[in-house]
Length: 302
Figure 1 (tube, rainbow, N blue to C red):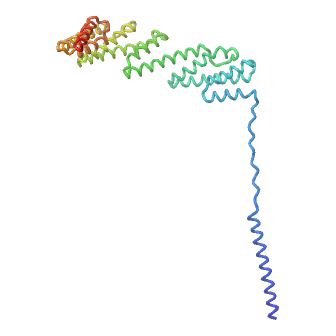
Figure 2 (cartoon, helix red, strand yellow; figure 1 turned 180 degrees about the vertical axis):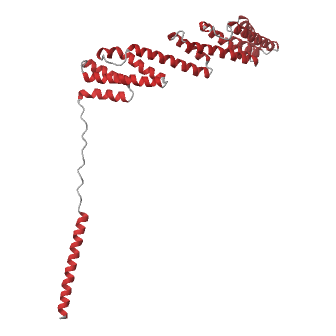
Figure 3 (cartoon, one colour; figure 1 turned 45 degrees about the horizontal axis):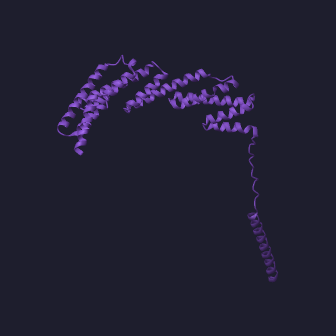
């Protein structure tokens, strides 16, 4: 009886062992089975036909701000196919975009940038207007915008130069601006501001007994008076006031030079007298005094 029980228990143990082995095998099989990866989607590149390539390049140039390059491409393509509606439409869009960007720059007071856009449109307008008749602007409009931007740009530069006390640069800018805008009230106002500032600076230097600097300011004011004579009627001083200031400075420096000359300080005398020539370059008396002092200095040196 006991043997039968042992046999039965052995059979049960064998079955249990076999069952556990099978289960482990199944689990292991599941763990090691590779799951197939989903097939990668291959993105299809957009195919660009050869005849479309120039238009794509023009569009890229336009997007990157290379407006002249874009227009050159359209001109080339229209030269080959002047009746092609697609090319005409693309060129029209480019011209309108350039106009829009120039208008935006003008409204934001970026006048140099606006001028670049308007000038490019004006240079190419005749060519494109013969092939594209429905543009939203005309050449007269662009010319007017360009003129306005140039004036505003001049006024901005003049104002900056005045603040930096670059008076000779201010004078040059005013002359350039007046050629295109004669009688412009805002330019007249800047001329008056320049002359008043020069006269005031001369007065301050004269009060400080800095005769050389005062003379330079008076001299430059007189020089600009002659350049802008027709714009001086509203000034709070006369040309005679500048002449009077120049005479005072010249006389004071002449006397200072004589003092040094009599002391035997020839170099000092020459230096003082040369400062007179910076605002009174035609003073023959001073030129002669300088020449005499230099000759004496040369004799001393032997």
